[in-house]
Length: 215
Ligand SMILES: N[C@@H](CCC(=O)N[C@@H](CS)C(=O)NCC(=O)O)C(=O)O
Image (cartoon, rainbow, N blue to C red):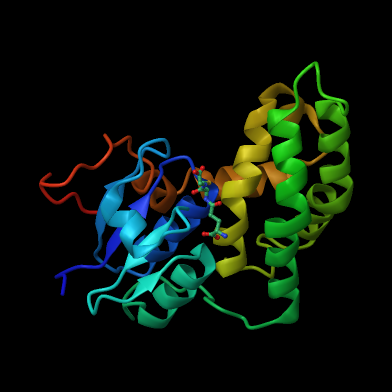
């Protein structure tokens, strides 16, 4: 038994960012253990041998090892005093958006991020395919409403914005000039929010015996 849920996390990982956003937004206190991906702690690998972050160990000992499961658990536990977020619309629209983000868009994002001059396919080709598939349609959506599924944020916004942040960061000059004004505004609103800033401080990697650091 542990007193608080324990989140194994990596600061810049978009999956871990969405999990931290959800827990923090839901007002759920948790211990944060920063992980160095090259030196994953044995305690984490024992809980979740697949070795990806985020991993959440609940107070009853059970383990959530998928970021979306952590978001859904957080939404089910949300403290009622927290500001309204339409947590889980359960709409097929929301599920389809997140599935496209985590599937085909994420693969193109990785291609864009990791392409080198030696790659058979240049970075721009991945970027342009990602824009056509996902990024431009998000911008179109956001020209019609402030958030992805309407005028208030939902779980989809918190789940997807860490990936758009990463996409924007690959070539910030290109993103700043791209014909994606509504997407930029949305990215800025969410990533400059007090919630987002509060889950991004730099941490040194956790080691057994360290004092507890709270999320
Ligand atoms: N489907 C997983 C994906 C998590 C994931 O791939 N996380 C990356 C970091 S962003 C990771 O831990 N990779 C393992 C590694 O780099 O060793 C989730 O949604 O939680």
